[in-house]
Image (tube, rainbow, N blue to C red):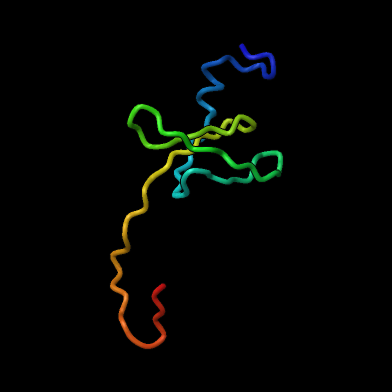
Length: 81
């Protein structure tokens, strides 16, 4: 058991929420205490980068964004940077 809570370790692990993020190498989130926290995502042994907020025990997993399937027309009003 953990001293901070009365939950057994198995139940603590079950309470971890996982979020998919598209920002790398740092993911920002609004923590349970109301503050904004930045979590460093680390790549381990060939896996996708991931990180965990130590304050709220939320896990973040990076996924590379896929290109849009929508065709963007060339012409007036379209600005390419």
